[in-house]
Amino acid sequence: MDLRLDRFVTLYVVSPLLRIIPKRRPAIPILMYHSISEQDESGRHPYYRTSTSPAVFAAQMEYLHRSGYHTRSVAQSIARLEANLPDAARSVVLTFDDGYRDFYENAFPVLNQYGFTATVYLPTAFIGESTLQFKGQDCLTWSEVRELRASGIAFGSHTVTHPQLHELDARSIEAEIVNSKSTIEEKTGTAVDSFAYPYAFPQTDAGFTERLRGTLAQSGYKNGVCTIIGSADGASDRFFMGRLPVNSLDDAALFEAKLEGGYDWVAWPQAVTKMAKG
Image 1 (spheres, rainbow, N blue to C red):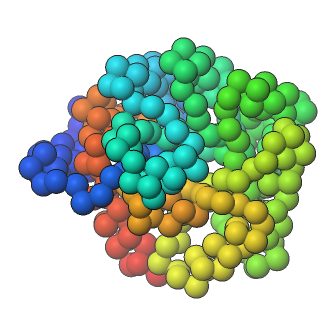
Image 2 (cartoon, rainbow, N blue to C red):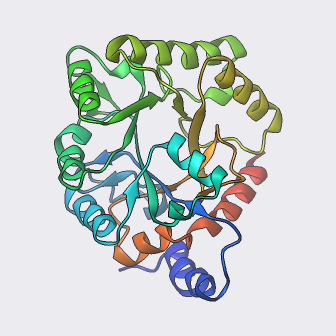
């Protein structure tokens, strides 16, 4: 395996330190998946890959099951963290962005095998009565969404068109947030209370973050996730919970370290990089 700085620091610097330094507060990993497929990402740096092969995904779910993890929703995790419940140590949240059809084909059968739950975040412009595509990949249809919902899979909003929200005006942002929520609710008959921010989250822009939080709350959302790296704890912003990205290059050791908080340090260089870009 080629040397990766993030993997090296996680496994040989941070994880050993965590074994001797007690955690300050309970934390829950929210795993961020996208496509569960054999998509060729050989031209992308490992850090930026978003595809997880079905074989790797199956092995990761088997590890969670064998290790005694229980899957929770974002709302359930927030409640446990705020109540400081002891079972937080073996809780995990599984999230899937972009509404790809390979979730139905490759992820759900494995989740169902172990009785695991998950939340799929839908960009509603690409979810249709017949199969539509997003970024060249097939997406779920509404009938498949309803079938999955009846089997315990939750759905949240990932906007309508998956835009760079930071570049839009206030009215356009509100439309993306409100219309996606109402469409999912209309098509599934169930309330939507969770939102996933598309693309890199601009946490260095405090004004934008505050305005977006207000729009989400006024639109009826109760929580949300984003691309800030890290495990969720009681101090996390419930509308912008950090997550841990997963892809095919997460071997067993790195996957385990991510679950145990060893990858959370990446949030610091991530934030510094965003600040440098302005």
